[in-house]
Image 1 (cartoon, protein in one colour):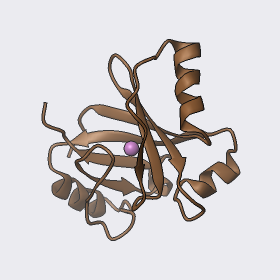
Image 2: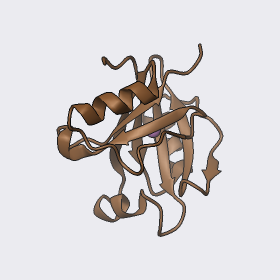
Image 3: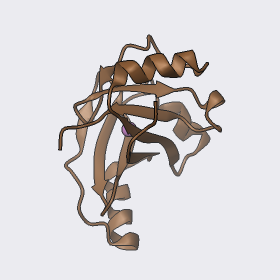
Length: 139
Ligand code: CO
């Protein structure tokens, strides 16, 4: 398995609207999606559009949020994950397991904020970075 395009960089932030403003003010990245709540995932999400990729802004929804602990360690926010596209999410999961990587959770792909199935690979086998693998969206 070879991963495809870098789809987005996930960035945890304490305040999504303030973060959108920062990307607009500092970097001229003024195009962003509406912020949407995903209560079942414990996050609010918005995407800042770039020429060749996107920044996924993640704000925790409540203390049970997977992003909550991250922000306790990084109160101003920080890089949370990278997301690569793969042509077949099930084949990618099986391949990652065969190579000894840890697939988080049950390993069953679930539909993330992009509306396509995703899985996450533990940072411990991945140079310290949480990696999201995403079923390649239709273009
Ligand atoms: Co993501």
